[in-house]
Image (tube, rainbow, N blue to C red):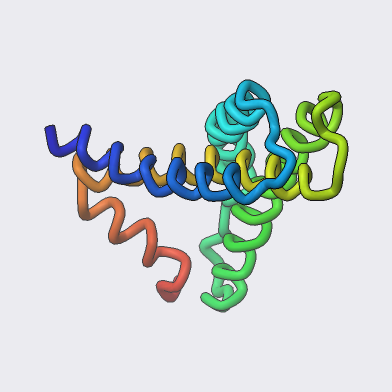
Length: 146
């Protein structure tokens, strides 16, 4: 029950923001295309995790914790995440006939990003429920001295 509530609590904010962006768009996009963009955003979590696990291998040598944190933030997280969100946007959304104005890029990009955020937050909620110590150490690990 707690796990289900945690996942719902992780997904609802993304859906509320998605509804907000949808209502703000003057020329509304087809719901089906937005749903696919959201689902593709959800699905890119797995490739991001695979890329991240291959890139995130800090050495046990005497490296500055700042450099380890910067490497993890940019190479391990930001670059794979944003690159794959761009692939969703350019590979699926931009090729759709409904993508016909600049605002569409914002709407579809936000939709894919919200799908990704909902999926990541759901995974973190599941991990936090099953092993709270793992979440605490995984968030703090990049800034710990090596």
